[in-house]
Amino acid sequence: MDLFKNTRLKIARAVLKKRAARSNRKMVYNNFTRVKTIGIVWDASKQNEFQALSGFHQRMMERNIDVKIIGYYEGKNLPDQYTALRYLTCFRKPEINLLHIPDSTDIKSFINNKFDILIDINFEKLFFLAYITTLSKASLKAGLYDADDTDASFDFMMEIKKPVNINDYLNQVIQYLEMINS
Image 1 (cartoon, rainbow, N blue to C red):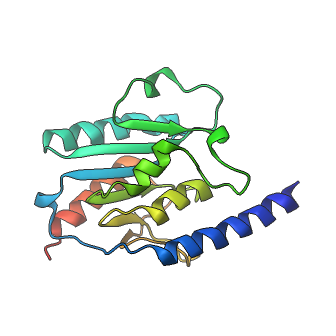
Image 2 (image 1 turned 90 degrees about the horizontal axis):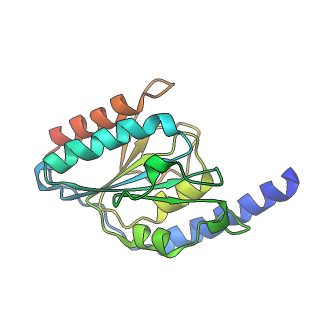
């Protein structure tokens, strides 16, 4: 079964590479004071990180920055804490096709949203989350530096010792973006 999974992933990576090449996104960033929207791609199966994301959302709302989070949840039923939140959308296995490509209207909407900043919290390098990040039309994409990942689609990368603490990661991304002026 793994043989077929690896074959499907190779095909999916080729499809992604082709779609990314057709993308006409341009990286644009002035400074953090002009940021109005942030998108976050997250592995929602890590429920222990939800509190940090919720706190980050609250801090950004205090700065009048709208935050939208899309996450992949591995389980059958979403935890109660994930439901009825307007800023969080979760997708599950039925919304991933045979090639491991996520396919739903929520995912397409997230990809087409022109966020000022997209923050990738896909530390396990799940393909379907990387797919969303790669095709996102966000003005600036931020993520973890990985010397082994030659296909990373980030405009801004951070190198942090593992295991990565999500609070520290989010705080450092914002701290460094605040220092940048075009």
